Length: 461
Image 1 (spheres, rainbow, N blue to C red):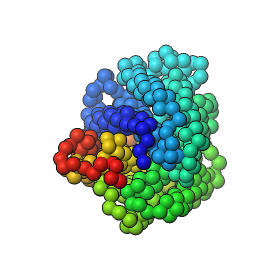
Image 2 (image 1 turned 30 degrees about the vertical axis):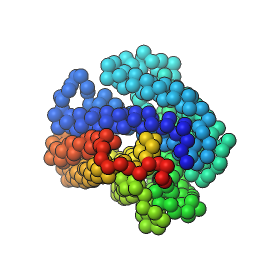
Image 3 (image 1 turned 90 degrees about the vertical axis):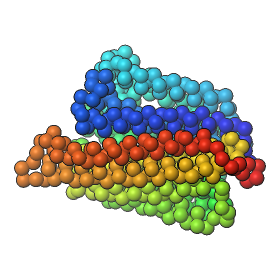
Image 4 (image 1 turned 45 degrees about the vertical axis):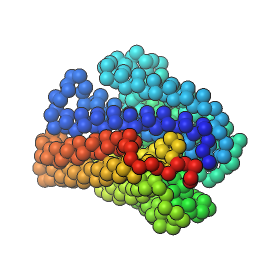
């Protein structure tokens, strides 16, 4: 059954994809700056391009999560959203705040931006991924609280399901752990210790609950498998995610001055972190194999299966490659970290948001699926983006292995910059793969405008 207030999700999804395009464009700029050091300098210095690239990643995924919640929660709760008007107001507040922040990064030197935005009152800026000015951070908290109020009231007044409760727990956790971005102790060890409570406990903790809930929701819809079966898998996956992810924070404490026991705790529990992602892969394929009907939205099914596989490879396998402390001693801060980060974010979070968009956008236009021609285009975009991301990861991994050997293990280690010259070929290959990825993203957007044979209407579902 469709609910009128689910249409609120549409502008969130459109904004998410638009910001995703911006993120990828700045990724290409950075890729060129690795090879041509003064490219766009001083207009867009590398540190600014990187800041915009990573901040856009976070913001577009948050838009995606919020859009998914606004679609998923009413359907799971079997009632209209508590306040669609409030949801739309927060959309514009978040979008304008995000846009002004990016403009600030690009137009004003970062030190001046800090001074202009009250960083002297409460020092929160200057930390990786948390570079946002104080007013932006406060705005994020306000938007998050209003958003959580809106969906929590919807759940409280309606049907409670495992999927809606897991989604709610993940979103509340996201908001709570973001509060540590306001804590910036002068002691560098304490700063890094609590900084990871935002960064790690987001992406390897509460975000995994959101991922699991979104994937379970789509699989229920496209497979027709009994809800009870999918919910059992969901609980098993999130239990393993939280057990391994929370204690696995210790793999970031190896070399920051924290007690030595974190090398054991971090290594052991990080080594277990691939398990929930492997379970997620088995879960997705198992549910599709047990499906009771062939859903006309084949593209959404493909994205759902791809999410399981790529999340396992990126977050699981590539995370495990350098998570044990004796290995991490040589690899931390190298291109191996970048390889893991790219595939993990794409596989676990970008793909699940695109799964949700692929499934819900046709429904919000009154049909169960886009035309066959549109779906063929979308599936081509899936393969272009996914295969190119695999190559980006492989090229960065090769660069990282060579970097470790030349800079950290060799009998006569090279300097950082001399090492970069030696691995430049992999940066060229990474850039070429990034161009293919960008074309794939363009094809994904184009697929929603492709006409063709009439698709099955939503009323026939």
